[in-house]
Length: 441
Image 1: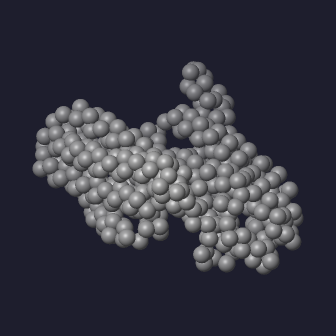
Image 2: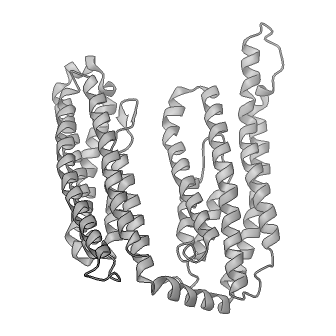
Image 3: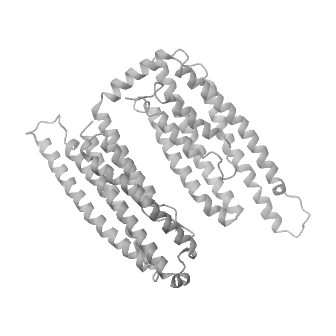
């Protein structure tokens, strides 16, 4: 039962606070991905009640991953010091984020307004028209004004190809244009924020609306066991699969930016979602929690060695073999922690499969029930096979850490193994998740 008396509507307002601050080039003072997370949290009690809000949540989830990826690229782009590359990246991300953000905001307020009208909110229609108009203007202006200063780099390239050193270029005023675009974007964003906050606050202060909304949420969600099973299983599996994918190294200047504690945290969240359905997996959840904190010092030491000793250069490695051996040992232990956490999740998923993998409404002696039992038994065996595959991949990856100093080709082999492992495990997890969902419709 939600503890927030406003049913998390305040989180939507908090998320919008992160969005209205303009971004300068690819540098975001208030990271948008935090705002997207807050909005996703804000629709926690609403997305099961309306298809538009469910669609909006999916859109904000995509935006979260895209913006997070952009922020992870920042150190690499900053080290390049190439304005043309920055311009290209800014332009590409702006197009993608602009389209997704407009659709997400439109779906969000369409869904909220629909629920408000159905539940008889006093001010359901007041201000909603302004919200739609300002949201569209804000989204278009935000990304156009973001790209405009970067396009001045094109005039700089033309200038470099001429011999006239006194030639005037728009690039000379890039800083001034950036400030002007930032101010305009800020003003439009402020108007957008005030319109949205005014509309949401009108609903938050409508006690009758909140009461009706909570009653509907309680009846259609909290008391709907099948829905909770499907939702928690799907969400838990999504987090776990994200964690498995993040186990694959992503090297920037020789440093793996997908630090081991990131996949560990994702898998812990996945286990926690399953724990809300099955309390007997408490030990598995505790193991995943311990692995997170145990990996932090190992991750810090590995990152230090990678950065300090010339980014895994072969020549430097010969002079610092001992440090690289220590680093390899730490990275191997990190992989073992990831493996333990993955095992904890697979064990938890097997418990869920045994408890909810067969439809209880189907006749026990019927053909359909027998087929479901066979399917459940097959998936249990598939999980056990997944344990074995994960162990083999873990051993190969750990061996790679010790051989990589003398054979860089081993890193490619290790990466391919991890990618294939991620694909296999992901398919297994989602297949089991789908089975649980289908039997709890």
